[in-house]
Length: 150
Image (cartoon, rainbow, N blue to C red; front, side, top):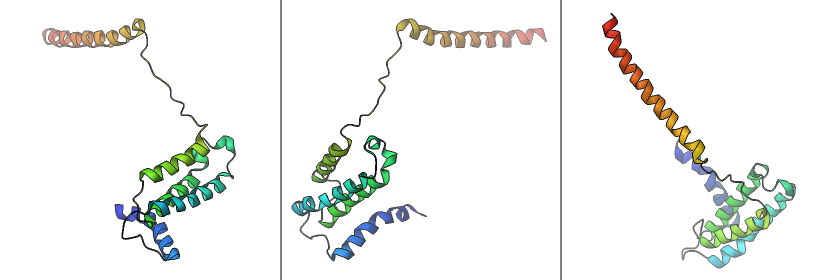
């Protein structure tokens, strides 16, 4: 299966929507007004699906990834139907609004890593360096003295 076969499912929703609506993207380019009128359908469907997820699980993507993927695909299809590229600034703004509605209380728990104090860091660096030098010296010394013993 080649890379093209993997991309085909993304075109299926667009093709299905075009067949059902009997419309094709406008020749004149992006119809932003119509796009903004159509995108709320996606958020309405997403909101309905998110009602199935308990609010305290909204920050756990694995709980609603299927719904979110559906929402994203919907915004892409609706945007493409009106001749706009996806993502575009208006669509991104719309999606950001949905994020604010559902995920404003979710925070990314990031640990800020910092260097240990110098009293710990210096020995952690110098000990391996000194051991490497010492072991190299032992190997060289041993290889020179092995020849004399035989």
